[in-house]
Image (cartoon, rainbow, N blue to C red; front, side):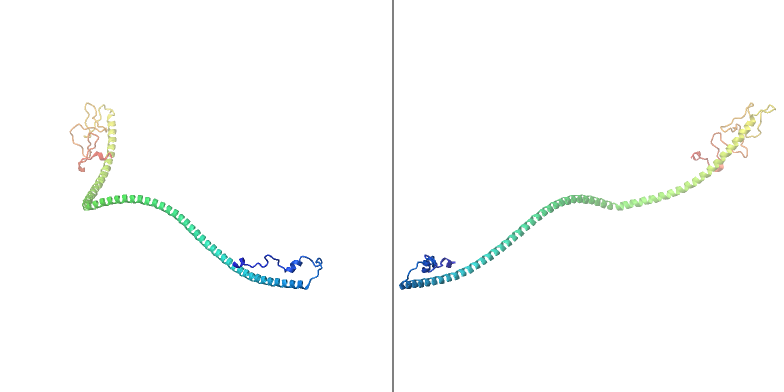
Length: 296
């Protein structure tokens, strides 16, 4: 670059042509005045042209060297341009790398922010779960306390188990005794029921016999009240019937049976009846009959 500043200027203050050419170059040959040159003039002219040629040659050498220097400077400038381009490319690459790094950091920060939001949501969910766990813990504590109370009660009952076992044995024995008593009384009741069925059958037969006898008595009374053609009352020769008093018939009970007013004995083959509605009991039956059984 310094060679550019020191370029020799061989044409400063003069033209690029020879002095003779400058003087005569601007005029054509047709317009040159015809003049007669002397030999001295021509010699001076040749000398001046030779000097001018030498100076032109020196200027040419200087221009050549300047051209070479310029070429060298151009090559150096091109190298510097390539270096600058490489530097720019490397700078751009570094910038791209830094931009990529920054973009990666930004993406990472955004991911961290999103992760923080997720962590926040997870934390809120964890708080809710913790509250639910506290509630469940309280419920379990209450259940444990209740179970502990039940266990204590069961232990107390277990301590009372021998006493309860003894009481259960006593109750079992009492149950067996009552069962035996029940079975015994059940057998007795069955026997009594059978006896009552037999007695009921006997009473039914006796009632039928009573109705039959009552019908016979009524028939006999009707016959007794009928007047005889002889004018005398009907006299029953059966000693079980009373004799009429003052021509009247004897008294009868609610069933129309005649009442025996005398102290005579009951005839053989007769069934004695009481004066009431209760039938007499055969002494061979072994006791009086309870009429309450017939009303059932």
